[in-house]
Length: 307
Figure 1 (cartoon, rainbow, N blue to C red):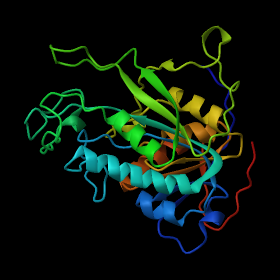
Figure 2: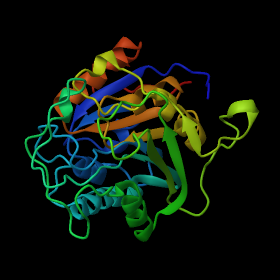
Figure 3: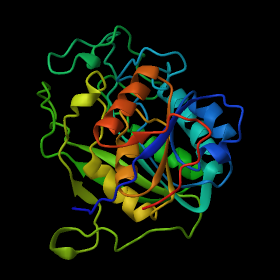
């Protein structure tokens, strides 16, 4: 899926809490360091057109920051924590807004309380792992994506589509008693029954409408060394184009390495990226600057929206 890009380079960087109204702050693109719950509660209602995000996966990474999501003792607590946060997301989303949610699955630990280091990905090593969740068995596939999708559906979200992100260059696995996993899910959810969806903004192979299996290779991001959960711009671009118009606000409450901000900005949208980890926020800032974005140094300076 190829797309044409526009330049939208200006952004501000802030730390929550702020004295001024977030409505003023969000007249430009922004990176905000702070807890997602607190920032979302301070943002104006119905100010975001679409949300594109990939939350931390359960029990797969320790990002070493207080307040992080993903290390809950129970997968059910993890699902509840994410569902609570997406309640806050729903408040800031416009009535015709959408949520594009990338989430991966995991297996029960099989009784192990640690994860061995991986030569190709040091971030996979963990010195703690939760026990096998109640109702599951050792080595079970947990089904996290669908558990989360159904939890959001129960809380009022419209579950509109499950998209398979097929990774042609997926990482190999050492397991010998099941197929190597080469896909993740992207769920399309909406706040209302009718919502903005630019059906012709992106075309698939042979100029067909976009289907539910997307072949997108994983991409190394040199600027994101130390953050191994990056998703590629080729996965985010179609979500931006189909879920928003030029000048709209695209939100990522788990900004990480900044792919959503990068994609949205290059496609002429404003972005609001929330990140709890200051190292990752700086990583995103540097990544945007490397791609030609301009950071506004004066906090109160108004930045005109232009495509």
